[in-house]
Amino acid sequence: MSASRTRGLIGASLVVAVLGTAAACGNENGAAPAAQPTQTPSTTPPTLPTTTPPTPSGTPSTNCPETISAIRQSVEKAVWGKGTPKSAFQPVSVTICQYDALATGQDYATVTTQRTGQQATDLFALVNAAKPEPKKPDFCTKELGPTYVLRFTDNDRGVLSYTAEAYGCHRLVATSFEGQGKPGELAAPRAVTPELEKSLGLR
Image (tube, rainbow, N blue to C red; front, side, top):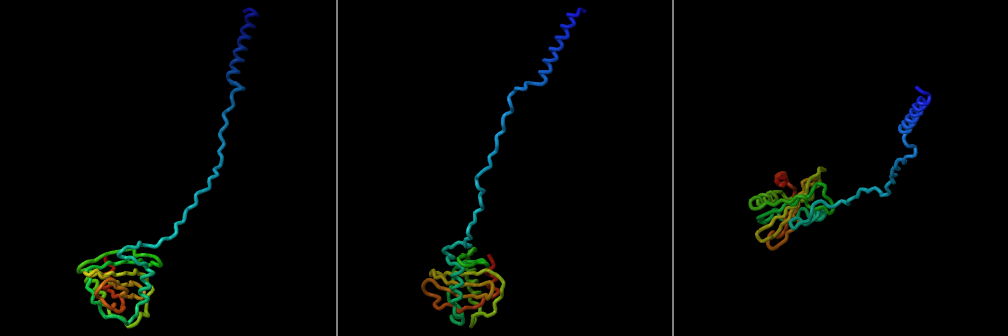
């Protein structure tokens, strides 16, 4: 082989090697990678929990229109030892308004039930059967219990109301009469009997 041909092969080999090296290294002047967007911290204030003011329990209705505060005031006004031993009222129906044991202030009845016919008559008989007390009870227990308002209605649409306490002094007081005719004078205050309390607990 001549010296000139040998130099040609060596030159060609060098060119190929240089091109291969350049391809392997890549283009040093290539585009830089795109910049990543920066996250701006949120300036929106956190939502604070809202506080709802307490509302009285129960809702007023035509059958149970009074608050527990008004009911208790009526009971406190009762004059013990005054009134008839029994009521001559003849009910045909009764609405029972039940106030929660923890009811206070402007709380209304939370449970309302109605009885008609013989059921109303039987409940009224239990009210009348309780013996009148000559003076306000001076021995009262500390247990909690509901307050009941019994609104008896007769054929003349008269409404005779009693309040029965299933706790504490267990007072049973005729508080008002609305309408014409009977009963005249309200029955004397007395104590709730176990039989009456049991009947009121039924639904």
